[in-house]
Amino acid sequence: MTQTPSSVFYDRIAAELSDIEAQGLTKPERVIASRQGPVISVGGRDVLNFCANNYLGLAGDERVVQAGIRAQEKWGAGTASVRFICGTLEIHKELERAIADYLGFEDSILFAAAFDANGGIFEPLFGTEDAIVSDSLNHASIIDGVRLCKAKRYRFATSDMGDLEAQLKQARADGARDIIIATDGAFSMDGYIVKLKEIRALADQYGALIMVDDCHATGFMGDKGRGSFAHCGVKVDFVTGTFGKALGGAMGGFICAKADVVALLKQRARPYLFSNALAPSVCGSSLEAIRIASGEEGDALRGQLFANAERFRSKMTEAGFTLQPGEHPIIPVMLGDAKLAQDMAARMLELGVYVIGFSFPVVPRGQARIRTQMSAAHTFDQNDAAVEAFITAGRELGVI
Image (cartoon, rainbow, N blue to C red; front, side, top):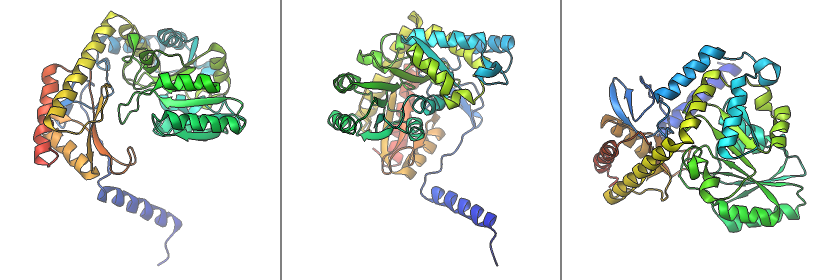
């Protein structure tokens, strides 16, 4: 019997899905029936949530929610347009000004997602005469953005300043006009904070620009939560970030830079030119989140967040778990085997704690883990309950 091209295609898709399942790499979607917060409803019961990017606990904050509702009531559900046609509302300009002022930049540009911000930053600004030197552990969105750009590409091993210098030397030797170093501010799967002081010194030595993706730093790292560059006490040329994590938890991304850079991006960045403007409700919620994060209440939330992280790290280490070292509220519990990570996450849910196992291709093969994430909204009692659940599941599965 002759197979049609369509049947060959669908047979291949089914085989790939079966292979993913056999390797224990399937990533299930668990349906949540409540607002995001330290406690969520999953499968008809309340469980502790230790895997959200809700660092300041603002995703379910009533003030943030109501600010979004008010914005939608005033501006409608959306613009039904891209920004340069008839999609720029006053609230978009207000949010661009607010995030630029908060992070200390001349201007900013909004995107529908942080993925789009990283996808849109390189191609309009750098060409065949230029060079991008990118950290090997950078987020997928940076990797995709670099691929869209015609600049020469160089890669350095994470946190290896010797390798970074070697790549900068090579780029200069190859005659690069402009060089940009691209890096995550905090690496999302490991919680490592970038060595920005050392990168700044090398950038100055070799005349390079610095771009930092601060999605996992904006709002809670550094003075007033301005990000990894503030935490490290240096200046950078471009910061990309999101309103989908600490700053409200909705969605949307941004690039902060000098005003002329932003002006050029608004003329040429394809994700900006060809995507609908950010929804007004997202803008309203994000503005309220920035207001909270930038003030004294933000200081208190950051204090609680890092107290939670320190407590969790200490108790989990004492229990015998292998953690990625660091100070960030991303705390990966290393397990190695993909199926073990999935089995442990499932057992943790049974014990009343919602966490997710991460495996290839999200992390390298053999480095499967459960990535826990702390929130300022967690209490110490909830923190300790999560540790006890880990101990129970860890003993049952032979992890500790």
